[in-house]
Image 1: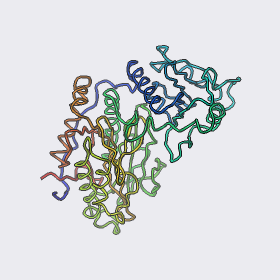
Image 2: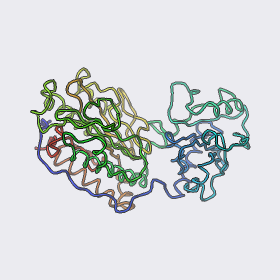
Image 3: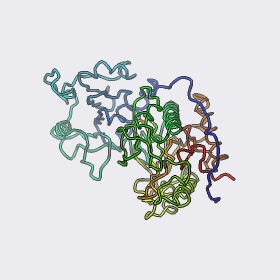
Image 4: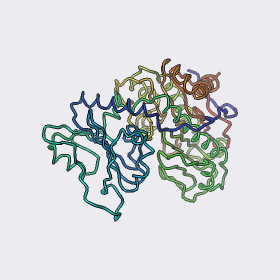
Length: 457
């Protein structure tokens, strides 16, 4: 493989969707999802499924119902052959019609005051009325994570305790894997409508990142830089981050620091279905780096870019997750690059769904997976480098669906893929559709953003 080098180029312009897509899908999609959930419950031997959500941990519930709690909690009971029951607090009742199944009358809605905020009007409420729970039932509870023990459940204890009292301790189990298991979780692949929304949010976040990076100057205030993101109200998947100057706290938000020449810089902009992150040095070239970072380009940024090229070479439908792990860890020594987290993970409405990538993983990558190129190197002196963007794995059938339903989405993805191949020398397979308008772009010296790394001849 050729050695990566700095080249001069203008960052490409791909544009955005003319009309913002909705993350909510047509009613028929939610009906199909409910049917698939019921089939999965039958295979698991579940008589009841309780899908819990709150403002931060909403994605399973939103995928199933099109309803995301605002600042309260919510719970949806699914029983095969019966209408789902959705419990919501006081202030979410007025928001429930945003859910297509609720608006269509497919879901029974109940007010459950304990889900409301503290000291709001309340009245006695029974959690389990009409659910016919007893010791002959098996109840799955889907919070947001899986654990080593099936009875470890991350929904609030006051809910889980009632379920266990009614059905028995051993009959209440963690069922989050139905949605997020890397091998076959229902939310680990995306449909064309979801991909269209994620392409839009990746576009918004990446265009914001482009403007932030091109506005970096010594003395700039972190708050002022983030104004260039032009936040438009789309829900955040995690807090916007920006650290510079004396702020060296990982994942830190802007706090009133100013950019310093020769200092470190990182920024992350994340909306539902997207997280765009870049980091590097506030420098026009090697001459602006602190003495301890001498050799940053050749010893750190270039090897990282080359390893990511190998990562892209391994990224294809049918590849095991271990292939992505090996692409990184066989090239970037731990003692220098200190890569601790998975070499990539799945992203959806939530920023991290799960990851099929770890040492020895035989989990096959599948069409419809939305994968974050989230490989995080770090070094006490060289600092870091990053090209964190979203990519969809899409077979011919899925690409044909996108072409039919969302032709602009596919056209932009294909244009991005061609740029990464021809101008950056990154070997993207025909299965891979880049979602971000800054995909693959790494500018090690952020005061010279038109100097980017490339493997192209």
